[in-house]
Image (cartoon, rainbow, N blue to C red; front, side):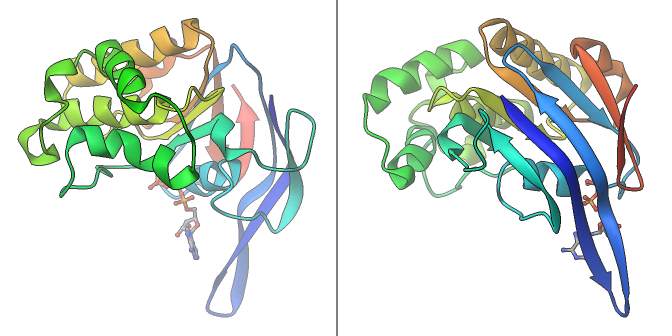
Length: 210
Ligand SMILES: Nc1ncnc2c1ncn2[C@@H]1O[C@H](COP(=O)(O)OP(=O)(O)OP(=O)(O)O)[C@@H](O)[C@H]1O
């Protein structure tokens, strides 16, 4: 369980300081599928970076399973856009985060499992430039699953995808969620909101449940 308590993040623009995230509260439980919507610039990415530990809040606290420390292995983050390493095969891309984090295990077996789940087993030896945008997005999801995270946080996972591929991505999150992983996504696209179990709106840094 991930809990954000009264989180504020100030940014400085020349002489002015403004809260990009303004006293946000959020609880993410095991079975949750949360969507955060809101206009561009409302603070969604800033909130997500704080949730994943990439950015420190100016004020407030974050608890993971009741403790204020961050066990990042329990949270996987899928950033906006294409973020696979282009000079490495899909297989190496899948292994890389585990290797960097010093996580031991049968990488090959897990890679096969996650590629099967996303329907892309035949891409294991390919380089990212051979894959379509939709396939690359599903590989990013596969990579996020490699360490069996309790929570997957994805910033705009359907951006720049056509409807068919966006649906594939959302169906995948639905399956992953049904198998016991909490999902938190941000989206501009109202068509995909029904996939989530709860919808929050971000407006000028203020987060509220719809
Ligand atoms: N490092 C930074 N320094 C100063 N201001 C920033 C920084 N990062 C973001 N901002 C500002 O904070 C506000 C929130 O940005 P953020 O990227 O979190 O919004 P967003 O809702 O994710 O937007 P989008 O949907 O376009 O990605 C914006 O006004 C942005 O210009």
